[in-house]
Every structure is written in structure tokens, then in C-alpha cells.
Amino acid sequence: IELQQALREALQAGQLKLHYQPKVDSRSGCVCGIEALLRWTHPTRGPISPAVFIPIAERFGLIIAIGNWVIDEACRQMALWSELGLRMRVSINVSAYQLRQPDMVDRVQQALYRHGVDADQLVCEITESVAMEDTMATQRVIEQLGDLGVKLSIDDFGTGYSSLSSLRQIGAQELKIDRSFVKDVATNADARAVVDAVVRLGHALGLRVVAEGVENRLQRETLLELGCDEFQGFYLARPMAPDALLQADLRMS
Ligand code: G
Ligand code: G
Ligand code: MN
Ligand code: NA
Image (cartoon, rainbow, N blue to C red; front, side, top):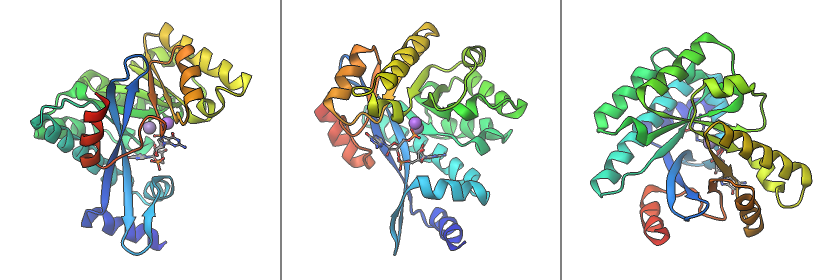
């Protein structure tokens, strides 16, 4: 369709931006990291959600170029923040298509090197369903990213099917509980039971457990009670442009 062409041009014209959403330590309230989220404002149609354009990018083979841009841009931004004395840990979302590219790891390594960013400052978020994908190519890339020193996070956890052994093998440092469970955690016994189980599982495997999509105080209190390590969501902070984040960050610390 024409959106595909517009997206191609957007990438070239620099219309894609990254916004950043803080992840906050549940006990200290400190910002432990931030998630980079793609934003696209079409010149005439206005903002288009990544939930709309990422699937298009994947279908038309644009996701690799966009994913590479995200890797580079996140590293560039980390280097800029470093110059201001802020050592930020940034999470990026990685598509299944990227993980099937054997040169994905070189891309990441080159971006880190080019911008002088340490590997452990970068976190790759991989959705549970993709992380558990039983293909050699994907598993090898994930393993090599880990070997490089990049941190791994399992995104949207609870929506896919994890075997406990693969979960352990993958060498992640973080589990992000899917928003759908967080939404109902304070009002629905089943959602609460899922969150409780995921926190225990994560901790048993030595992982930090992040609740995403935290939108109100009641959710936050319940999640704290259940032992979640970090919160992310509109109740704490919205995704922000880099400049806005700099100001917000000063207020939170
Ligand atoms: O920010 P928002 O809630 O609109 O994002 C919608 C979806 O798009 C989420 O599933 C999010 O993970 C995904 N997304 C956002 N940024 C990126 C990105 O840089 N790469 C990929 N692959 N997905 C992204
Ligand atoms: O799939 P992934 O977890 O990467 O998706 C992250 C998306 O969730 C981002 O697009 C972000 O805009 C969105 N998001 C972040 N915080 C909240 C929240 O509190 N509520 C809702 N509904 N969405 C959120
Ligand atoms: Mn994510
Ligand atoms: Na998620």
C-alpha cells in the first residue's frame, strides 16, 4: 500500500524518532533505565502508531533498515547523555526478523563501538513468543548478543508459551509482565495469581521482574506487595522526547 512507501520515505527523511519511557525501581523510586519507543509523525496524516507501522515494516522487509536505525539512534542518544554525565541504560525492542539476520550482532557491536557505548548499557527486549522460537538462527543471535555483553529482556511475558528450561537457557536478566495482567492485577484474582507466579518464577531464575503498563496507584501498590522490582507505565511517566526526559529525570532523582 502507500503507507509502505511513506514509511520508506520517512526513514530516509528522518521522520522517525525515538521517545523514551522511564523504568522506575519499585522500592527506591530511582530511574533504572528507559525504553526506546518508535514514533512517526506523518507530514499530513499526523502521528501513526508503531502498532500500525511495525507490522507493515515487517511485511514489506523494511523492518531491518528501521531496526538498524533504532540500534544506531539509541546508541547515539546514550552517547549524548553520557556527555552530560548521565549514564542511561536503554532498552530497545527487537523484532523477530532482526533476530533471524546473522549480521544483527555485528550491527549492534558496530553501533556500540561507533558511539563509545558499553554493551551493558544496551538492553534488547525480545517478546516471549520470539525468544522461545525454536529456530537455530534466532537462538544463535540471542546467544551472541548475550556474549557481547548486551542485556536481554523478555517482553510481554505471560502471553506466550515458555518452557522453564528455555527460559533459563536464554540468559536474560529481566522479565516484563505483559500489560494485560497488570491492568487487572488489583481487581481480578486470576490476573493477580499470574503476576504472583511470574514474580516468583522470575526471582527463582535470578531475573528482575518489571511490570509494564502501570496506570494507577492501586496497581502500583498491589505490584509492590507482590514483589515486582520495577514499574513502567503512564502512572510513573509517559514516553517522552529526549529533551523532556532530561528535565523529568532531574525531578525524579
Ligand atoms: O509505543 P507504543 O505502545 O505505541 O508501541 C506499540 C508497539 O510497537 C509495542 O508492541 C512496541 O513494542 C512496538 N515498538 C515500539 N517501538 C519499537 C521498535 O523500535 N521496534 C520494534 N520492533 N517494535 C517497537
Ligand atoms: O510491546 P511493548 O511492551 O514494547 O509496548 C510498549 C508500549 O506500551 C509502548 O508503546 C508504550 O507507549 C505503551 N505504554 C507504556 N506505558 C503504558 C501504560 O501505562 N498504559 C498503556 N496502555 N500503554 C502503555
Ligand atoms: Mn517493550
Ligand atoms: Na511489552
